[in-house]
Image 1 (cartoon, protein in one colour):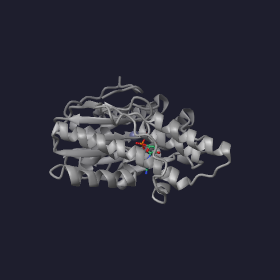
Image 2 (cartoon, rainbow, N blue to C red; image 1 turned 30 degrees about the vertical axis):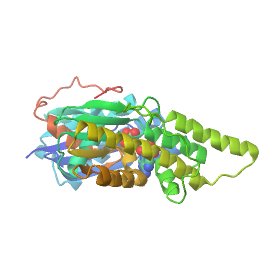
Image 3 (spheres, helix red, strand yellow; image 1 turned 180 degrees about the vertical axis):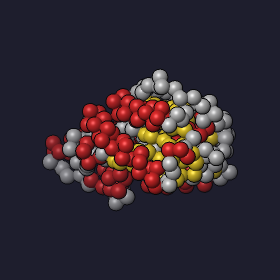
Image 4 (cartoon, rainbow, N blue to C red; image 1 turned 90 degrees about the horizontal axis):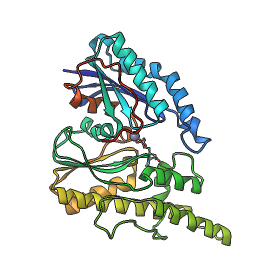
Length: 334
Ligand code: KG4
Ligand code: ZN
């Protein structure tokens, strides 16, 4: 049995969790800073770092308390080393180093993207080969895993991430940051009447592009404003969401077929999107009924430390040392 205290501070959530054997969540405390960033319309890195400093120890203590675990009962400390905001990552990395040093525990660095994928291991066992659609505020990637610990990016965005496009469009619609959740709600009250472009669907590339869709959306809204026309905001949201979801689902299904995977795993903040969850579930049922689809519960879609603890477990045998040279890696890739 291995108990890991995991820490995540890559963006705007300060989080700590206690995870047993990579699969059992004993606690997962998430302190969100969204309210502080909302008035700026996005995450302000300096503000994020300051909040992490204030929250870090409180969140760690709470995670241990809820898990009914003492430092002596821990086997390792895990922390997100990247990718993310450098100042934000550094708070988590230094907190992890301090705790690991004080209690002489091994320190396991975790890639945030791998964390998002492994969040699903807290739901059910991962089965290989698998394909993960990772969709968040900073990432849109199709990751193929032939076996545990092996990652191959077979498709990615060439410009905006899916979540980033949601948030930028949200700003135009005047919804609070981050816009994804609000647009998702509005989309369910509207109809896809605008038929925005579905980018890169004709090509056989697995890559994505969302900046053309975003521009098309913004132009539509601005042109209407100039003419004094009033557009239905729910229809705008529904049309935007339909374009994003169609591309994500079609490419995921195509890659899953090509790679003959046994499992498809949805991951990242945008995995909370109701439209995407429904459309992907239906598409897998209709086109790939022998493939298992894993959709994370809402609490494990956005940034959280439980996913970092789950991912750390697979790497725990390689990291049985306390490496105090660990540093934040804002541009870390897979
Ligand atoms: O994974 P995450 O918490 O942070 C990053 O690693 O980026 O993802 C945050 C992103 C934001 O862009 C947010 O708008 C988006 O996830 N998001 C959603 C929904 N809930 C959160 N996007 C679409 N629909 C949602 N329901
Ligand atoms: Zn994330």
